[in-house]
Amino acid sequence: MKAGDFKKRGTEAMRRQESESIRSKFPDRVPIIIEQGNNWNHAPLDKSKYLVPNDVTIYHLQYILRKRLKLSDRECIFLFCGSKLVKSDSVILELYERLKDSDGFLYMTYSQESVFGFSLLVP
Image 1 (cartoon, rainbow, N blue to C red):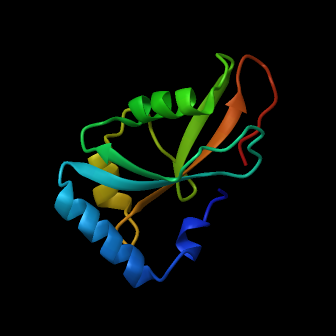
Image 2: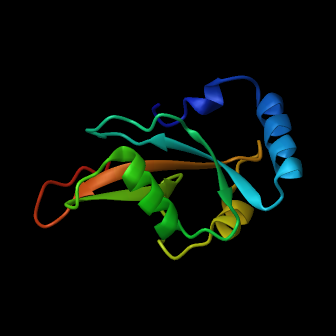
Image 3: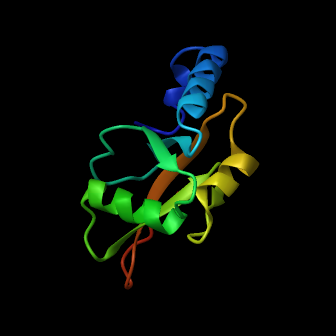
């Protein structure tokens, strides 16, 4: 799923209602939409909607996504909110409170860069 595809589904009001419902049922979790960025050369994630515990760091989320994407040791994954690279020590709840969309979801994209001298793939 390319960045922005989730927002094309339904109206903003429908998405807002969904995020509010999720937050009321799971107040200790954050509804996040994670979509692939440009120049992704691997299979995409099998889903884009995630419910992440409030206290999870971006580093931990990256670890989970790396496993789901089956990346090699030489490949890194970078997470962005909008065009901003997210620091790995950021806590999900803090990001959510600062950067959530008007529909109540936190939108993130993932991109890749090969490390140890290999080609740059970040858009």
